[in-house]
Amino acid sequence: MTMFSRRRFLGVLAAAIVCPHRTMSPAPPVSLDIPALNLLNVPVMPLPIVNGAWDEARLGAREVGLLQTTGRWPGDALAMVLAAHVTLEGGVRGPFYGLAALRPNARVTLQTQDGRLWHYRIIGRRLLRPSDVKAIYHRDGRRLFLLTCATWNQRRQAYAHRLLVGATMDLTAAEL
Image (cartoon, rainbow, N blue to C red; front, side):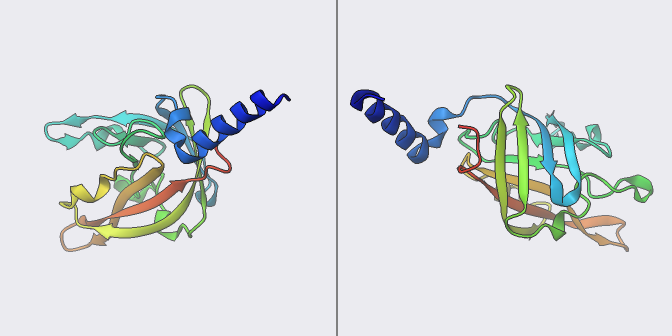
């Protein structure tokens, strides 16, 4: 490798580390893996807003929805938010059943439409009120949030909170 090509290579590498969004392409996620939950190759579908709310009725026991108005791909200006059911009618477990048990550093992998793999690691979680929508918007495309219902209220027959699990892109494992 010549000195010029080595410098050029190191410059591109440094730009990718300092500004990873430069190497990220606008391809939406198509599948999700969370090995700790035994979720492998779970389809990710766009979840549009219908009548002022995300159309969660499109989600079943196997699908995960990418919330419209959040990040659209890894490295976008906003963090992506993926939502799925924790349980379904009749007590059937949804894709995010067990999400609350994910431990820090658990691995999450997204495959995008262009075939690239994006690796994340869990960094934390918090409970939100259903009305606390602002909390899901984060201006960092290297972040990923997983969202589901939490704390079942037997009297109301509804979930009282939302569980928001945060993950950060693992740049050492990402295919840059």
